[in-house]
Image (cartoon, rainbow, N blue to C red; front, side, top):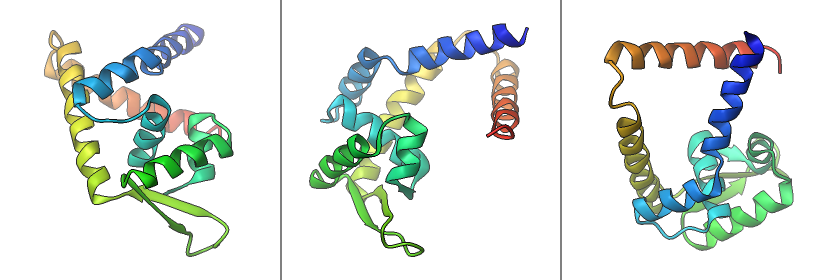
Length: 144
């Protein structure tokens, strides 16, 4: 049973991580982002404020490639970076006001797609899924 659960999770992660889905999300949201920068942008929006190291670890990418994408996002006015107050060697990133606006457009697109995907689910089924996903996340975090 546990192996089947893991396989289902891998299937979901594979769907979410497909580059063609990122391209479609970028197009549907009407934003101008490269695919690699898009993933970093979404990660920052999810974790903010976040360090380059934490973001790279979450994404399974190396520090330098994530740092380069953050530089691009900052150049485009989407992200603001600054030294951590606890350790000035650590670079912290968060969305700018413009970045928040772009993230809102992406979020609306994502919500619409999820609503369409779950259109034949009852509210109770969606609520149950959310509760189970949260519980699974908490359970898996205990083993980090």
